Length: 420
Ligand code: EPZ
Picture 1 (cartoon, protein in one colour):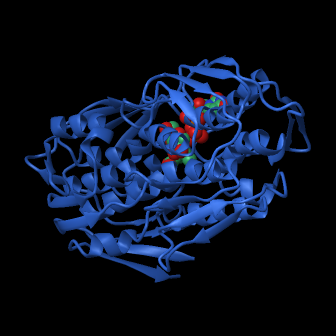
Picture 2 (picture 1 turned 90 degrees about the vertical axis):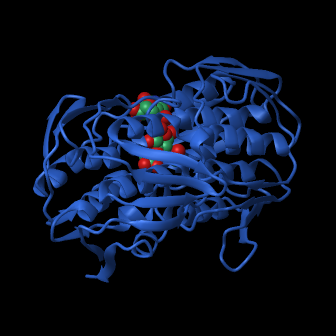
C-alpha cells in the first residue's frame, strides 16, 4: 500500500487546477441511467470513486464510455438489463445508493445492497426509502438488501424531509422526474451539487422548479433524453487547497474555483486572517497575517460544510488562541483528532464539539488516514509541521483528491508518494 511522505515548513506558491466536483459527478452519473439516450458529462474528475461508480452503472447494463483518452468526458446511457446493485460494490462506496431512484423510475424494480455504517457515522438511508414509499414504491429489507418495486410506476407525492439530506434529495429528485404527476420535496438540500444535478436533469427534459431553494417541485415527464453537461468545480477540493495556502503561510491561485459556492468557508477564513480574492481565472488565497482561532459549526449548505471540518481543524491547530469546532451532521467525524494530536496538536473532543488550542508548531510523525477528508487534514498538518510525516492508508485520499502530491509539489511542497 502506498504512503505519502511530506517534509513540512515550505510556504506554497503557485497555482492549482481545481477539478470537477466528485459529489456532483456521482449523482450525475446515475442520472445517466434515467434515459436510453446518451448523457455526456465533461470535467469528470479522475478518482477512485468515479471508477467505482462506472463499474456499478456498467453492471446494470448501462454503457459508460470515455469520450477522450483522459477520461474527463464520459458518455452514459442505454437499457438497464440488471436491477441489482451488489454488496461488493455498495460496501466500497455509499453513494452507490443513488442508483435506487433511477432504477425504480426506469425499470420499476431495484435490488440494492444496504450500505451499512461507515467511518464517520451510522449514515442510514431511511429518508431515501420513506420518500420512495411515499411515491408508491413497496420496499422490503431482506438479507442486507433493499428490495423495491413499483409495478404501476412511481407517483408524484408531497415529501417533507424531517432534516436535510443531500443523498435523499438527489435520489428522490431523480425518481420524481419520471413519476406520474407532481412531486414536492420540502426541506430539500440546496448544495451546489444538487443545483448541478437539477440543471442537468432539466437539460435532459425534466421539469423542475425551485432549483437552489429548499422546495423542489417536479412535474414528472414520460421520458428523458440525452444531454451534454459540464460538472461544476469541486468546492471541497478548492477549500482544501485554500487551507493549504493558509497553513503553509503562502499564496495559491485556485484555478476554476468559484467563491459563490464556498462563501461560508471564505467568511470563516477571512476571520482567521486569510485573504481570498476573485480573479478572472479563479480564487487567489493568501495568508495575510498570523492565523487566529475562530469557532465554526458545520451545517447543511449554505452553512460551513462538514466536508471541510477536518481540513479547517488542521489550520486551527497552528492558529493563535483557541477554536471550537462543532460537528452537527455526522456523529463520528473526529477520527483525525488522535492523529493530529500525535503531531503535537492540542485538541480535546467533548461530544459533538472539539476544542482546538493553537500551538506554535506541529512536528512530523507517522500517521494514518481514516477517511477521505481526515486524510487531507493530515496532509495539511504535515505541510506545516517541522520534520517528516508519513501518511499511510492513502487509498482514502485517492477516493476524492486527484493527484494531490503532484498538485502540491508543483507549488513547492516537499511531498512524494512511496510504494510501501
Ligand atoms: C453527502 O453524503 C456527501 N456525499 C458527503 O460527502 C457529505 O459529507 C454529506 O453529503 C453532507 O454534506 C456525496 O455527495 C456522495 P446526507 P450523504 O444524506 O448524502 C443522516 C465526502 O467526504 N441521514 O446529507 O450520504 C446522515 O447519517 C462526503 O465527500 C439519515 O439519518 O449525506 C447524516 O447524519 C462524505 N437518513 C445526515 O443525515 C438518511 O436517509 C446528512 O447526510 C440520510 C441521511
